[in-house]
Length: 470
Image (cartoon, rainbow, N blue to C red; front, side, top):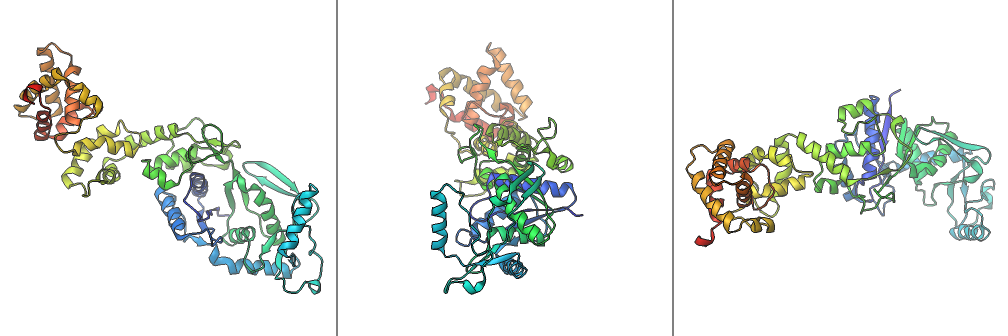
């Protein structure tokens, strides 16, 4: 048997983080089993579904690196097939026409509510002939669900779960206007697409009982079900925007790499021993449904930041230039020149060692491309007092005569000056950092000086005037 999984989002908004994890688990399970991972857009809600949302979902999955097999399927475009199955079920006596008006159903619900009964359809048209149908009422098609016994699901995460059939009513398969319901469409699509494993959030578990009844009515083979616990915030509350319930595109804009987000989502409810940093190859090799926990996972930005910092340090410098450059170009109005991109590439080892996100990486690189004189931040301005500026003037004189502009030569020169002035190296290096970067925090300052080049470094030093020359 070829394993087939699917991800089936509704295009009513962005690809949220819970959906991304569901897609990842389906993708990994299919790849682990040497099977297929399919994508279906469940766009039957025509009022809320948008092309912009479809594009956002496709872009989010592509950015995450979750490549699907074949073309994405539109559920709406298959509505004729769904209706065909419902009519076949009705013709076989597995479903029936119900002529209840909306007012009649509303009255039934109010009566049940008033008497404390569960609100569900009472099957009043289950065995009535069409000859009794009231004039002018377009019927819906309802499933003739079993009334005795239980519906049992052998769930790969939740274990065996069951519900009494008398707790489920005869659900609608086709609406009065002939459009199929979600419950019917999902089952028909999964069957026709050959889906063998349905891996989704446990908020779908109650739907699954009803969908199983359709499978059994049609004598179709049941897929294997695995319902994943939902994601909560770090405080244990239901995930919201303040916890990180954002679209995948927002995580890209916040500066996370796709591989770090994949690794983080993998560990959010699934585990393999004590492994925390897991490559794609390892994830595909190790992934199994048995590793999914039953408890809700907690989203933690601190852990995501830590993982992202690791992947930034491991990332290819040329690739990071391509990722960081757009952040630096925002507001400039012009792209980086080839020389500036080369500078950014050479500076990348020092920059990425300290950053947690691409946004931080870009912010820490801006000083390389700032116009002279630099704008000093508050700490740098406070550091450059009268004495510090005098020392800078002396340093500038010594550095100006260097014939080799390399980090180790610059450092040796500054060390010699510190010794001759009976000072600590930091008392010279920190003012040097403030003058060259406009900040008190940067990559190793002698490497910075080399990367800036002699002319630019000296220009920045000279722009920090001493009180006497001001």
